[in-house]
Image (cartoon, rainbow, N blue to C red; front, side, top):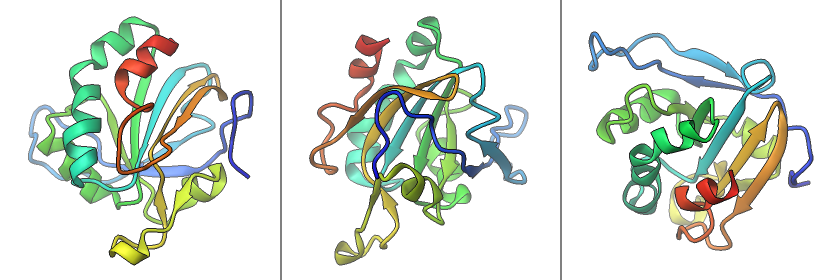
Length: 170
């Protein structure tokens, strides 16, 4: 079943590599982002994408969030989390290539836990990207509850999940 507005955001543990401003090229140990404990008492924007480094994700989707991250935070957003079906090392490399720095947590969902728990998984095996991916979505999670959710009708496009839609919803 797919999550909807008003639902409790499911608890999963995602992994990410924290950005190190003292050594941006460092590859630190992965950290756990627990969607229950780390989202508690916070307003979080969760950006779900099918794949790091893919054309739509890298050209149309993530860069606008990087550019407007401060605007999101000025509207009360505590955390911005970008999640993909890639592993945390790939997500870290993608974040570095997009100059994300500390602004967005780049988390991996390589096992598909978030996709299964939210009902937002996507099978891209027929195009060679694996059978456990996230569809393109954006959620505003306020103190653990889904306050806003948009799911792209076509995951190869960005029509309703872009940063301007999120800013308007805030």
